[in-house]
Image (cartoon, rainbow, N blue to C red; front, side):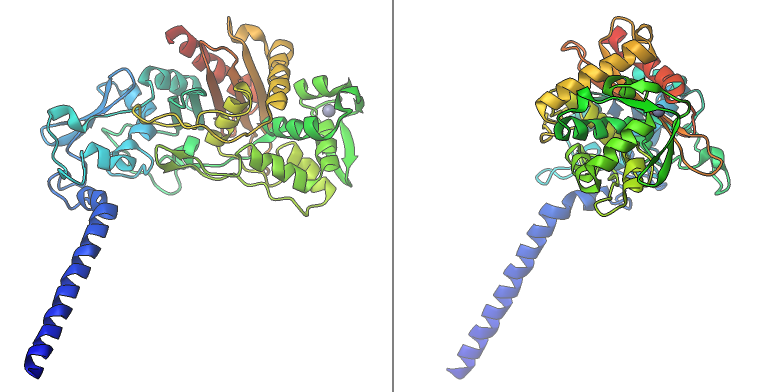
Length: 445
Ligand SMILES: [Zn+2]
């Protein structure tokens, strides 16, 4: 009898181990199955060289950006298209982590937990991106060899139409990049999604949003800019004396003195609150790709530091994609669609990045910038609203040129961001890129 009891206990224990093992396997299969299939040693979908040899990547109007020929991964037939879409599509070697070939590898292999990596039709592995290769080429050409980031998205649907990062290279013929080659510095990085930069004066829009909601007499105030002032014990300079200003002319002339004074008056914790609310300190998930978080932590800082931070200097860092979404929200009454890269993705909206009334005033003042300062004829037929930025980067480096904004038009609900690294003047350099790209957008769509 004792013997039978002992054997029954052993059997029960074995049965328990079997079910526990099965449960663990099922859990891992569900959570990690796509990783197993897209593991580069899987010769069903990867060649010996580690490249994906299944599936195509298409742009929004069906141009084949990457396909497989004779067991080898190849890219678009035109070299300029290949370079302009490199960071959206990716490379054979997987050096560009945010490229579709890496980021969407589970979709490209056609993996699903029921059928594995096999699909019913030959085109089942195709992945269609929201980008338009033609617009990427326009942006790449407008950057004209400079390092930078350009993005355009539809703030009502979230579709990213244009996403270019430079320096870039031809994925059919990838270069060997040496560590001391500054011309190719950060070539594997998608500057739109994965980098942060000093924002300079484009950040004044955030300071302005905080001032609009916290300083009831803002539109009655007047300042006289002499070109150099002390704010909180720190000298704040403008490129030249702006003279007599109200808030409208201070914004369109981008007066550092006025905006540093406003930020110092509002204080570090208020400025931080509005920066966070605008989404500039958070990461977005762009079809699963996490964007880089910006930084702005000044709750306890002295007035001089808060002043410089309010004009987008100090230690502020902003991700171009987050700035793009903030522009979309200003255009769209305070909330915008979150950006995505897969055409099949559904639209999801951000939280309230700006109060609706504040967004409306900001949009009017950004429109006035274009009309009074940047030149409406650079955006012909467009209700373009914008803010430029020329961000000092310290040392001998030329400033980063920024130009961000949107079209206030239900037919063309597009926001844009242009950042030219060490490019110089915001309106002259980055504004020229924005003008070329937005003209291509409205001509085609
Ligand atoms: Zn000034």
